[in-house]
Length: 178
Image (cartoon, rainbow, N blue to C red; front, side):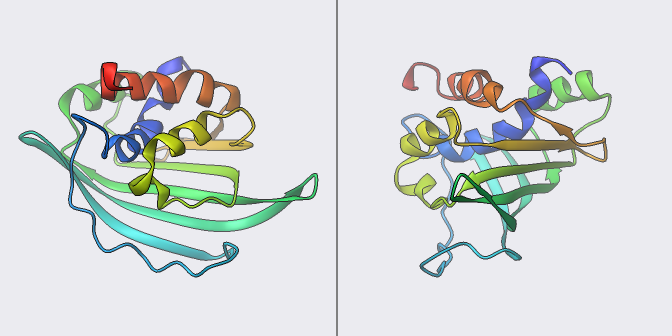
């Protein structure tokens, strides 16, 4: 795999993180889920249909965020969290063509399974810069598996996430605003 094979997965996270930044994408935020206080619960999930608009272009997909299980590392509870993106439609032509070039088919499903500490994902709406800082902090993402369409899932080196992949995507999305 080359360095671009991970970009599509983090492009979606990058889109969410960049939505409240200057000159970034804008979309209507639906009512936020009323997550219970306390720990995440294995077996729970939230589902959204997402429509992202930038200027006259828009694309959409279904997003499922699920807590699949837990793991204890040095006394800290970590959560296996799945980001499941399906039914991608109207992806921007340049991004779609890049993915066809590397995978020989257009994306229709992306899955990321990450091992992270409990985290307030709603912070994406209130403080996206902090979410970005947290996700690029070495050791925050302890493990990650990525799957493109129905390809065999593969392990992603977590050092690449904060040190290369997310900063590259965010600088491409936000330019000098980053």
